[in-house]
Amino acid sequence: MVTLIGLLAIFLVFSSSSTQLPPVVAQSSGPLEDALGGKGFDVAFPGDPLFVSSTEAFNRRYSVKPAAVAFPSTSQQVGQIVRAGYEFDYKVVARSGGHSYAAHGLGTEDGAILIDLSRFKHLKVDTDTNTAVIGAGNRLGEIVLGLSQHGRALPHGTCAYVGWGGHATLGGYGFTSRLWGLSLDAIEEVEVVLGNGTAVVASQLQNRALFAVPAPYLGIVTSIKVRTFAAPPSATIFNFNWHLSIKDATAAIAAYQRYVLTANIPAHLGIQGVITRASIQGNISFGLVGGWYGPSIELNGTLKGLIDAMPYPPRAMNFDTGDYLHSAENLAGGSLDTTTPGGRDTFYAKSLITPSRSPLSTAAIRAFVTTFATEGFASELGWWFIQLDLFGGRNSAITKPSTSSTAFPHRDALFGIQLYGSTRDNVPPYPDSGFTFLDNAVNSILKNSPREWDYGAYTNYIDDRQPNGASCLSYYKEGFETIKRIKRVYDPKSVFAFPTRWLSEEVAV
Ligand code: ABL
Image (cartoon, rainbow, N blue to C red):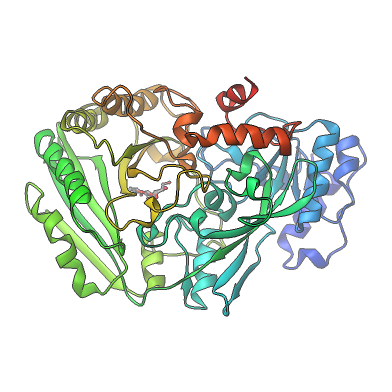
């Protein structure tokens, strides 16, 4: 059924300057429609074509149906929508780019009011202070392009379509993070709409209690002020690859870990180990992939100790040197353009952050590698990858802040390991064996690590299945107590749902 709202909404979406058009008048058919309609922003309800297109999850394992989708363009409008949720007993959820691994941008259950932040696209660079104010609805690709016009840059992930709001308020790892920190480390100030609908500024100076806690559970961040960094004149994206037996792969990953624990690695080096399926059972494909943000002539010398420590010379290697913008394009798969709709996937992902104080044992590495060379090789999944992102090592900016100063507590991290499995052709259904495979891989490390091992998990790779004894503590550490306390003060009615059911249950206790 196409309603009046639907038709108007389509019209607005396809017009280039929707803010100058008359406001959409909602059809009067219920209290929510009355509360959200006629307020100067677009709103779509189930049945509207706009509703359908704006409630698709990036991860096709999920289909969550909100009660309404609103498209505000000011914090005041966000406040009006939050108050409507408060008054009529709806959960309210914000969505910046919609790439949450567990579709949290749609709410965790049907029936939430979804605040689509895609109209918060402002990006303003102050060239005197080298700060930028960036609307939560910008995509990472838009941010790279916008900042590069001023010769500036920020640390963040690689995928161009990922939205800024969620990425930056929970973490934001990329190859420049050892040099500049995570996205959230660059934040000076956020504008946040609270559960009672008021918009406040939070920084180290104002509303400090709100500043260091993960945004999605406590308010809706609409705009973020960050310090920016001079885009390096030269950047090289590199890639080495080996096909290795279990024995050699164990030695290779142990050597990678030894190198990052002992070498004086410049902050300008970002690196990850990547495990993917090999063509022969009992083997894995192992890559060392990274970004070098210093003079290209110094890269070979920087990596020599690491490459020499591998069991064999690499079977393939690749270096792509250019300016910073070119490196970001390379990492985004060739283009930062986000004007056409991005792709979707059907996947399961999880993470494990390893402590520098207690590195992976050789037994843990061997068991981990064996899972991929055997179960991973035979898996019915279309493809999978494991990344061992270097968070720590000497000179890493990620490990400099204190544990409690931001929403990312893992400041003793050595590796941020991501495990990601996807179906053939990226379409549903996701097979049960795809869950057990990745659960087994994480368990292979946990079973071969000390009982009280202080590992963590990364909120931007959220796993809502809670196997492996994962809990709020692995994501937030001691900060979880702070989240609970602040939540009671700022959102007592819990208008912003905790995204995972297990998280809400722990909060309710
Ligand atoms: C992330 O958070 C990682 O930083 C990216 O490297 C990762 O991209 C995406 N998420 C996935 O959603 C993947 C590519 O899409 C794959 O093609 C590639 O095989 C993989 O990284 C391993 O490097």
